[in-house]
Length: 228
Ligand code: CA
Image 1 (tube, rainbow, N blue to C red):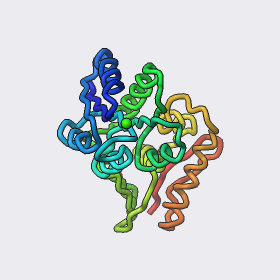
Image 2: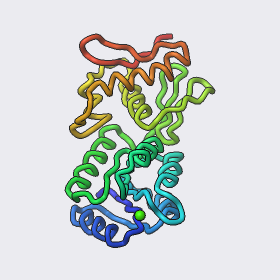
Image 3: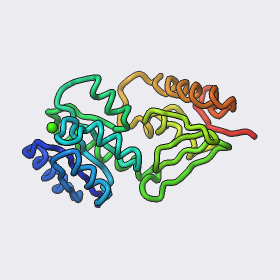
Image 4: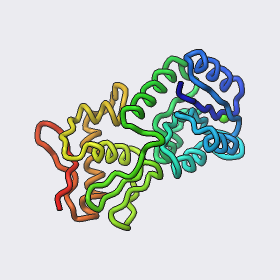
């Protein structure tokens, strides 16, 4: 069964989540502060991390940032308050999802299932590697994207989108497939989000490199293709 690490200093909450996850059949471990959480990630290599934002010794944001330097383990952040700037920072640091406390445990379970399924579908995990399209490279383990020797800095969502397209080079991917697989569970927002992010990638990749990678297939969707 997948391993889930809970990093949470409020022991009542940690214990509650732990029991529920164990009941679902997951292997569960709990760390009570940021630093021991980070050590546990390295030693135990969980398949998913439930990470509280406000933690002693090392903040959740910092834990998230450091985990992302080495691995792409899905991270669900827990925020105590409905603080938009914290959420945005967490997502920028590479969290995949967040939940505001208090939350319904069923919702956390549902989001965990989605992230684990998405990861399995993307072939993520230990066997990840470097994807290439011409001089463009994307390292699924270190989260590094580069064109030749020049690093390209992407947000987590831009990275996820680029990875998805690079794994399907030369194939047309529909907007629905992107929404479903990259954004996940019944994304309720504006469906133009896909176009917005494609535009971000064009600015950061096509315009910077002078190579057209991101192609629009009118009425269908998008395709990443590299032409020598
Ligand atoms: Ca806390």
